[in-house]
Image 1 (cartoon, protein in one colour):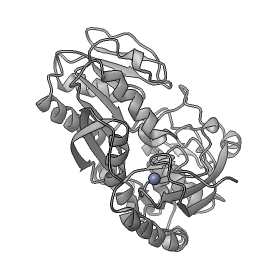
Image 2 (cartoon, protein in one colour; image 1 turned 180 degrees about the horizontal axis):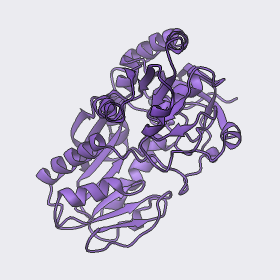
Image 3 (spheres, helix red, strand yellow; image 1 turned 45 degrees about the vertical axis):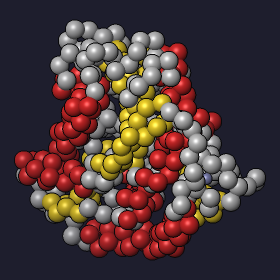
Amino acid sequence: MTAPTCPVCDGRDVAELVRRERLPVMQNVVWPSPEEALAAPCAPFTLGVCRACGFAFNTRFDPALMVYDPRYDNDVPSAVFTDYYRSIAKHLAAQHALTAAPVYDVGCGKGTFLDVLCEAVPGARGVGVDPSCTPREATPERPVALVREMFRAGLLSERPSLVVCRHVVEHIPRPVEFIRAVVDGVRSHPGTPLFFEVPDLDWIVQHQAFWDFCYEHCNYFTPSTFGYALRRGGVALSAARRAFGDQYQWAEGEAGESDPALPGDAGEAVARLTRYATDEQRRIEAAREKLRAANETGPCVLWGMATKGVVFANLVDPEGTLLRGGVDVNPRKQGRYIPGTGHGIHAPEWLATLGDREVTVLVMNGNYAGEIRARCEALGVRARFEVP
Ligand SMILES: [Zn+2]
């Protein structure tokens, strides 16, 4: 094996710290039968940290394994999530004239963010670009067109009022080149505002959230390395902040120069991840032990079968003996099985069929805890809730 190279600064000195023998390569693709789920593609994962710039990435990432097609589904139909989208839309509308020209969403998924934005900002219209979307034309009722393509600069045919790129850069093995392509796309429209959002590695490490390292995400940004990667890609940053209970981070700016200094905190980043890695196996075993104990009093389930639930099940219950299954509010996932372990995904109503004993519900994302508790109460499910 050749030594890994940092995809952000091209540094050759990379400490490999967090290892997984096998992770499902697409945790947001679920399967119609347990057999197919168990046979889903898996691959090894190693988190490396660049000693020069502090950037963390999967050194064993193989982009050839990734297939973003219409089966890919990371939708979370939740009031909490819609409120979050609305808060971003309001924040952006307060700064930019979003009704003057289309808002482009690079990596728009099913177009949900643009739908919410165009509802929250009357007169706005959107164009979403994503290789996994179902293409559609804009209509007066739903002014969001979707284009099924990989992003390329030529797609920005009209001057945009804003270009949004949410939860994409963490999937791209050459993030700086990708950012540069987005920036180049707006260079002929100077001053076009750019908005990027990714998960925040600091939150994962602080919360020891071992279930947040997944194969789909080859990149793990701290605010420091995110800013550095964006500047290297040619973004002149104007603002950055943490969001969504600090699990995410935003950065805003416009096309500018590309000549940043290396972040000064790379040593700290390596030290922090080294400490995390040392303790991780103990954390996973503790989660397993907790589930064994909880199984004495009743069935244990996960709630939230997107990234967090799928990876948690794969790491903590690979044999499928501790967790009865998972709940997800996305109806397209219900009745299907998660890659790697084949745990079933169910509608919330399923919890009412598990018998009289108290159900332990592991809430995979604490941001939804209130919503999940209310749903269980409405269903009359006797449950206790834990945020791992
Ligand atoms: Zn680096």
